[in-house]
Length: 455
Image 1: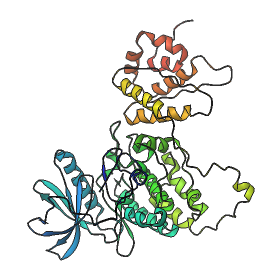
Image 2 (image 1 turned 180 degrees about the horizontal axis):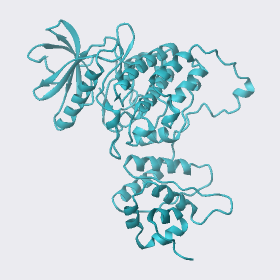
Image 3 (image 1 turned 180 degrees about the vertical axis):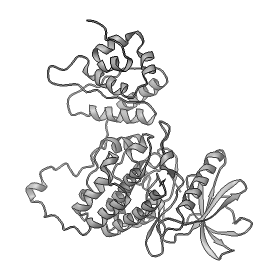
């Protein structure tokens, strides 16, 4: 296991980014000694279910779950045995194990989904017995690949198999919510299977409370990052991030912490994969960027459409090579936009202000400086942090030219707020000042059925 230097979270050996905070583990870790076989943790069981499952060796761990290669002595086959540790968090871990087992059983026998054979409990800890995948997972494949990236055709093959798994899952109203390399497993023939449905949910039950993050930040759809309802389009965004990493060796967005990465999911456009890997054809660029669209409606309609686009991208004729003049038109477009550095102190002050506001201590902050120094980006970072913490964020923008209405930024923010505000709560919040504010924002008079104050 690899401990994250940023947050201390235990990640599987070879992982590039921390599952919890997004820290780049490859850059942060000092060169390690030659890899040794991973030893089983202390207290590892030798058998479960009254001797039916005999543990052979330890495979790995993650998310309070330890996975072992075991022998099913009753049916004479190798299986993967996942044993959950419920100490201190019994109810939540048990719920996750139950959710994973129910989802995977509902999916049944599909050639692109890891099969579940059995479930049970051992000394109060739940376990799941599933199909053993001898080919390992895509995370391990990337760790062994040159530059951590796959051949274009191989990456598309895996992505197409994941699409087939999503077609099957979405048809049964199951949303995975945690697509990433460590959850894509490889069969003996090299075909990919989707596993680990521990965060899966039905589309109708996928809305989360504000401030609750579900998933892994490097592959997190914008709507899921903000605790909004996840749906089939959310899994397609994560598929885009997964495919991006298989093609380029890195996720579409990187940052110093989870909030910085989420901010890029919300506000930044990814660099086309071909800028990092010239072997990626332009047609595939378009498919990947379409999967990574910020708005759900701009992504493919479903997993079947995404698979068709992926397969077609490999046979579309290549576009002519750009001329030297065209190639040099924008020398900065190959840089990873969205990496935000040099404002850590300012961001720290602003985040403290948000924390204080959520605790009831409001503040007014003013960002000043010359154009182009990053004021808008800093405001976007702050907006992301506030929304992840469960706050509502409303924007108002100034006009540079003359003739802007009075208090224009505040008018825009108030208008955005009252669109969804409950009229009773709005009347209570504005109190005796409602008529005065209605002079600036006439929509308030309509919502509250009052007359604006006179001149």
